[in-house]
Image (cartoon, rainbow over all chains, first blue to last red; front, side, top):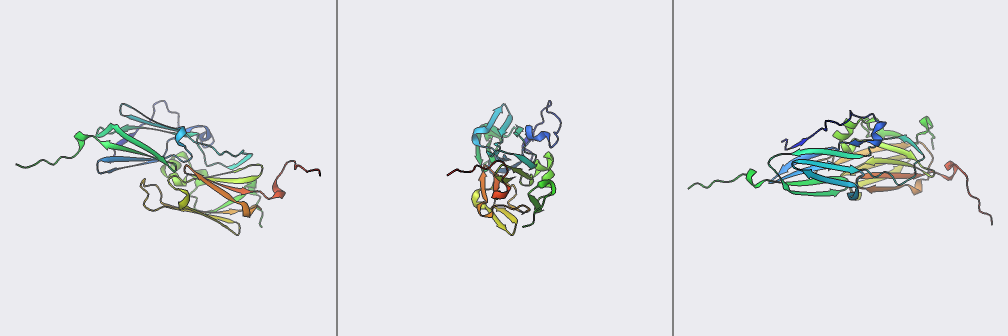
Length: 130
Length: 130
């Protein structure tokens, strides 16, 4: 079910080379599912702390931007980089059935979970038979 | 212990890395748990970094035997539907201070530190004058 549409910024640069990725923002991996009257959106943000994470909503456009914390160790030489990005950025347009007023977010073990309620008007109603 | 000097990289990957060392951003974002491994050197240690989003300290088991580091991360019924089990082995082809290998897992980012033996530590050594 496609209830979240990931948007691409028109001005976004082309996919960077692995060398360039150390200084750029990568689109994080995410999983979405619907459970009862809630939509769950899980976003993988390894290396991100709560202080370096911003989640914002403008009309129906959800933006997640996070800075990745690099190692506190003083690096002398890098043998193999896992194309570590500077951070993550995700823009997602909410489905009309989602209530933008009822969103909660939780960051745990490098995974951001957004819980978005379904609009009252979109919920299934049982119509009584007279 | 066998000293492996190719590219002076202290680690040989045995298994579990699906081309993760050269993962493109697309591969990395489609599967956050296989987004590769970063290896770097400091003055006193070699450091191996890997992303484990969604895993906590209790889910991860690390062992080192005969020059091979084994990493198993497993969690039951992950709510976010990311990978629930990761198993990787790395052969360490450098002499190191085995007794003092340490690891931290913070915000889904695992960092394993392999201290260098005294013979590998370059640079001036301070000699105490008694």
